[in-house]
Image: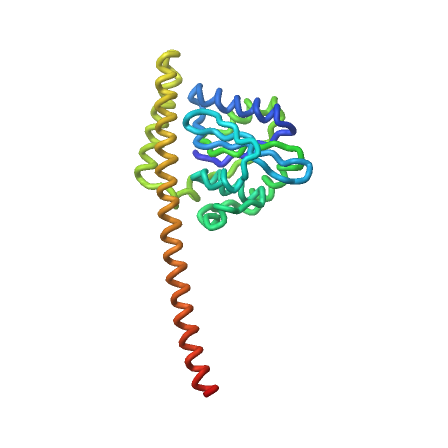
Length: 237
């Protein structure tokens, strides 16, 4: 299943080690990391992005404004980053598409104490054992929320086909030699980028549709107000 996974650590060194563990597990074909971002809360409670994964590998976003990063994330990772950091720019209008329980959001917010570092990722995992066993020695605290159902608003047949292709490639890794693994990993990276782009397109379409509905409601209210003002003028006249 696909889970939104939040892993908090006491310091940046542990978090970076945890990030490397995720990369290692994915290279073995145990999980698929669709999107991942590392954030840090300083002693003043301010949250900033440290790292984010792309299809081209790890890039560093130290000091990047969270609003900018959230806008670049196509899925629920960006939404949750905005929710737990208080930076809703680019995510506020999408929160109704994700059924995150209050308990989950509260638990995650509680994990992000001043000085802590957290990895927020969208991960396909067949069960919790791989992540739990790999990250427990590093002191990581893990929270999960299933996004398979809540994510349907941004999934279509094309995205589901890409995910099936990724699953097939992931299965091949387990029996492949080193040369074959490299090719498979490159193909998975390309498929993940294709998935990201498609979800971004669907996200933009949802925004446009929602904007059109809001404009329609605004026009309806304007017409009603104009009618009421006309009646008022007649009464006052």
